Length: 196
Image (cartoon, rainbow, N blue to C red; front, side, top):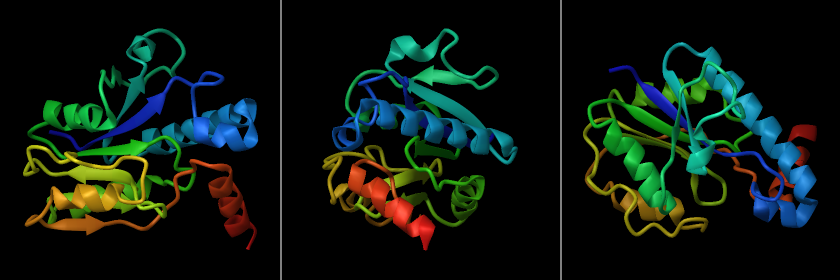
């Protein structure tokens, strides 16, 4: 089975994406940022032939139609919490190596995903740690916990630590630390780092 990365994406519509960021910079600016980051991430992932890229979209009704780029497989994320939606992706790919990435990581590159799959050669899971305590990538081999996302305090500084508890006794690898852009402060910090 071919290594597969699922890009989690929300239909880019005004007022529905990057709501915490929108509180700081406005709905239109947040939508522009999201569209640009999503387009760049899709371009980067699709260009790499070392793995298959699938777009996992929400809401489910957005999985069809012409609102997404052509030529990329897409599925609906399904209902429920992030724990349930991510868990379903891994369950539907029981026998293969799978990664999930977010669509709000502007510094993500194709080699990050390829490295995660390479690290799965010796580890059972790989995480891309985010500066805020979460993670921007999770990849797993077929030998994974039954409930890898149980009891996680999502959108908190403990999200990664809580998830790692579910991997106790398993080998876990880490990628480089990146920032997901959730707030205006995150965006300003990224711009400051770029200008150095």
